[in-house]
Length: 195
Image (cartoon, rainbow, N blue to C red; front, side):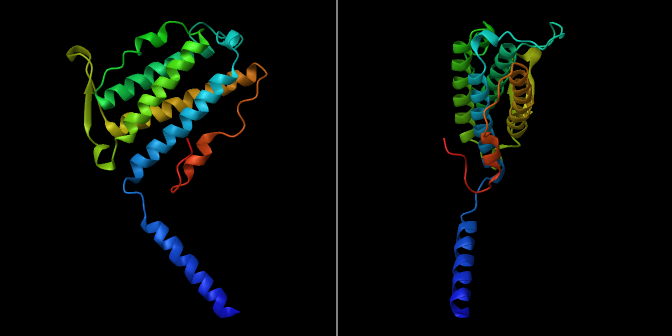
């Protein structure tokens, strides 16, 4: 019996070692891709949960400087579209369109989907060696510089911040956010979330 257990243990060790040797060649950029993919799914789910008539919701007692639900979604689309356009070097024609109406749920959902697709496409091109590359965007008078890695991390961190706002707005309206956030699945270093 012991030789069988020993052989089984050795087989498992070899299998896991072989799996580990198929290591991700670009672990940082892979992590950024998986993080953004999971986060974008969670954002889409939260936005889909809020009824269109509540896109103008602003917390009670909050001043006009506090964004409505729809304004937060519009803001996320604008920022992520800009960041991914900056990283890819391809201007996004939808950036200004996102600010058109923060109460138009179908339009904002479409823009969110398009921006997520564009960012996913851009992030798919990144390798770890590209992350420290400097990128520049904007007219000379207002030029912005960043690194590819910093801009990708900013898009994820900024989106996570506003994801928390959107979840709070849902709860303030008596709505339950989607139960199983995709973000939890990206923590596995081996298997990316399923599309």
